[in-house]
Length: 220
Length: 138
Image 1 (cartoon, helix red, strand yellow):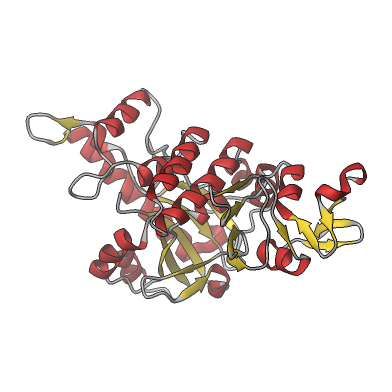
Image 2 (cartoon, one colour):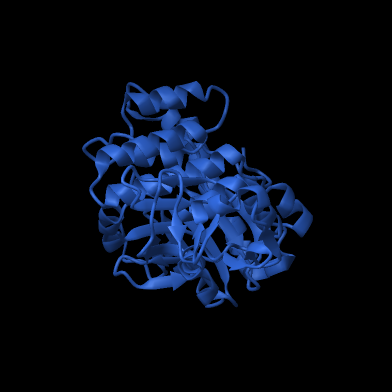
């Protein structure tokens, strides 16, 4: 989706930097297939989740020419239509599918508006607004990131049992992070952490959103 | 023993370190390289912040040409966690320090590899608008 956006905008003053919160082994085939012409980086230890307080994918921050965040991390054009699968068709219910398309379209339009208009864009937040939307980490979350980083590093060294302990502790300390939980969770044959435990966690959200909508006009 | 320190300075190997349970003694030079914190007469410092050595308990933090960097972290109440063998240590940042940094709205700089192993820094792209976007295979 980002390469298409870049090709459409043709604006050399704008780039996407994609961050795979993932292992190199899992991320590399996707990057090789997508052949992005923007930097596609791999963050095995979820260093950026600790730095920016990312909790899920896709999330994004908008960073201006001076390196300032004009939109802090938030859901980037996604809607949880996977929660509304029609058992008969195995496809998302039409209303959910429409919401998913609308979330994607609105987000991309907002982004294009910012690329064209910069600080004048109504989607670029003033400093006070941006600050009020920054999610601040708690002490438990900071500790979770240290455990996760150690676990991911040990996993890279092949020390899986010890790694799993630290990742489980990370998830216990930071239960709202899907990035921590899903990275460590069992994967199905297509590489998705979508077994029963995932669906139980999603069901436990109740009215809470898997992808909290970004504060943007029209996002629901 | 070679010890790997995971910190905001990257993943830094240090040698000639000794790890007692709960303690990690490094030369001040290695401690600085691995964590970005410098031993000074006024304490362990980074930028304008200095953590004084607790006078009553000096031996637990400072020896001749070695400092217990894990001890300082615990004393600061910052996250620090080690592997069972004590050969890998993750030194995290205090939540309030991270919150303050985010409050500045300055996008935190970082260095990460692409699929070919080439390193990129966010600051390499200063002067452009950047969409910093996460994704994953999972």
